[in-house]
Image (cartoon, rainbow, N blue to C red; front, side, top):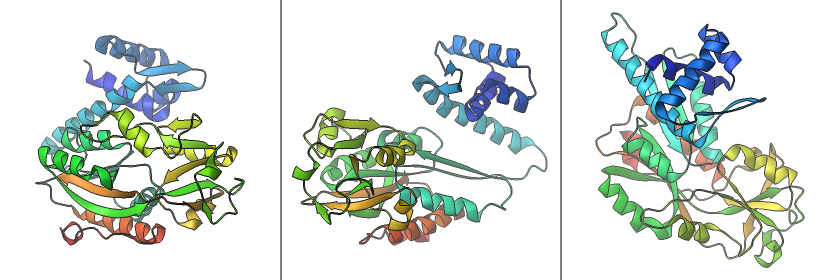
Length: 320
């Protein structure tokens, strides 16, 4: 496998275009296309879907990119180690659930470091299983995962097995997030009966150790209904809720001012009792860096702005 071809594929994924990647890499477009095809042939996978709109990653391609990023980073670190006078590059990496308050914290954190030279951020929104794998098998230092309290014993057993330490970031009851144009928008509380006929939006990849995904998904859904939209990316959520007012999602609380940007509001669902947790995980031997602690400060600020009754994480996380 050609390392240069891996670099080419990463640039194509970043730009979403053979032409733009070729310009960036200063290589002819036919040669770049040929290199990508050779890489796909070598690996016996299809990395990109090609269309008039550009190059998009396949499911196999997304997995390839996880490994490719780690390979290129290790090569860069190796070169930097033996390059005389090379400045040390700072790195921050975290995998997180689909949550506005975490995304806002990262935005504020990265903005505060805009003038910092030689720094790389790796921020990945994903479900719990890839987040855990990122810490245990890849090169991500931190992850935040979300699960219901009823699954606590399953996750604690998995943390022990994989030599991970975990600290609570927040505990909360889910709220309904809907469009201001939703017919139920003027109600203070909403009942399950009133939701009949509405379409529930849910994330398609719930995970609990030792349990079947179908079993976990059934417990996460609000309605015994056939009208659902399953999504994998948060980016499509706001558009769905706003453009289809008869939809809703059960999610973590958010600051009203943040939801207002997208024409959305929060509502309580009557008799919603299940408690959820956002938990920070890392390897037990890992010591938090200055960057990690800077991010956590922004995370707690954003959490407190969004949640009415947050549960503070353990002091050891803040003070490491």
